[in-house]
Image (cartoon, rainbow, N blue to C red; front, side):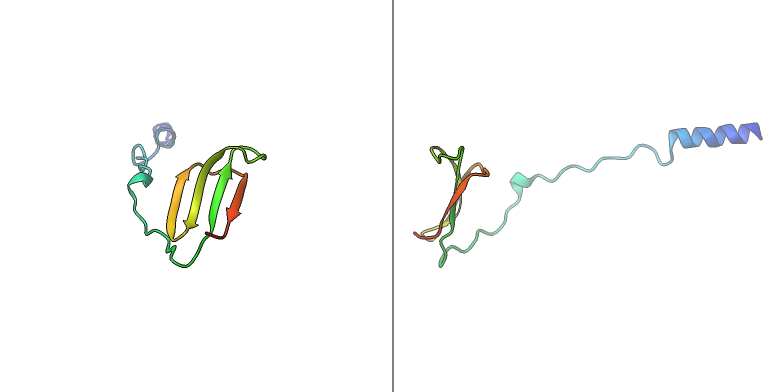
Length: 83
């Protein structure tokens, strides 16, 4: 009986099925998706580094029929809805 209990405790300590393999994170840089249709819309968002809007750090959106996407996003921004 003591051998049975020790074997059970050992199995619980070691675990069953061996070590778990961790899945690799998807490589988002290699994924492709369709660009937005900017034919009939203008909604450019310009991101700044401070509240005085002195330095632009990035832009996202449609502008004059083209998709623009560069730099970084911040909590301080201005949205332009006309070309």
